[in-house]
Length: 245
Image (cartoon, rainbow, N blue to C red; front, top):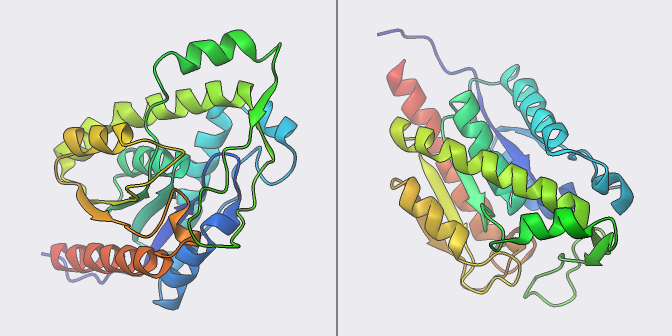
């Protein structure tokens, strides 16, 4: 057995659809405060204008996540992707792609309502946007930084991201990759179907219920719990890697 020490551990922290890095900054800060490395990328099409997201293909977002993972891997050996909503799907996808040491998903999305993908492809030229999906937070006076409108064309690309993530779940299951699911029982953006799918296809998934929070839990009442449980999984992954070496 090699006695090579683990250089460092860190988290790739991934925000959700139409949102920005601010929705995940509390998680990133908790990880950094615990002494771990952090990569917190702003995804393509986000943080500018909704028209930019409408013109962003799914592959550009997937590529950006892969590049962010590689940047982090240059600084540390043990990486745990952490994602909220769409970011949860991206975290699962990249964890499988890169053989990550673990994965944390917060109210992840893995599928749209049946038929939504086809409907958006048919309608986006005639109805470019629908109302915003951001801001599902129980804590008073907390505002999520996100687009005021949701581009329908981008919803079709979101559906592709979800499909790519679902395709990777058997890999996570076969490898026994530790997955931590942080789930709000009241979630007005993502229903329970995605979490149910994750637990069924990746049976080693451990679930923690965020009883005081809604969809954007890192900005909600359970923010401290989200950060603490994320740090615990990173610490466990780093410890497992050290024992393996």
